[in-house]
Image (tube, rainbow, N blue to C red; front, side):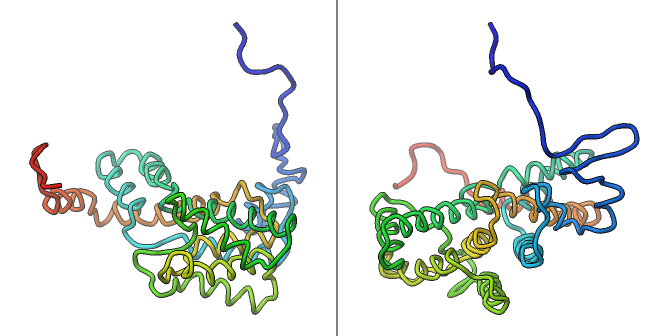
Length: 265
């Protein structure tokens, strides 16, 4: 039995022959190497076009903003994996990247989908954008969901990274409809949730990238790419000053054992 589907498979990203490598229609050695920064090259790889100056600047800024945040779960997972198998640097990086989900690091994508839906509602129904995002938040709240891009266990009352991103967006005049919708969402969040929640860096990343015409479906790529750099920094330190097994020891000390059925809950 045949599986899959018939047809000709093609790629538009790259090809190579004995004398050259072609990436997105350009010769790697003569047209790209020595001219593009890695940030510009990444944008070209993902979108098929070279970035404008604003796109390059803010993509660079956002990658820097999210690359490192201390001993967060992804970095702990990578360091403990490396401690268990120092011969597998790639495995330790992969362990950290696998933690980029809907709670840690992957929330830029959720924020982007929220903003894209808000824009769609705004364009189809019209009306005050503040009312549109408030109704969307009320729907999320009624279903027991969490507001995408709001709240942070450490950064309160504001996330300084988000503040800096929006400040630079204002200075450089690139803020558009998605930044505006994010601002209206921040204004409505307290009304709907009944308490102040700081806008975190994930919402800022999504708003800026969408205003700069970055693909919605690839928003999660930004924290993944950025955090890879941070993970490699932690693994380089793990080689010289290992703490992977120390973290395991402290975790075992901090968490007590409770036999099944003995809880008061």
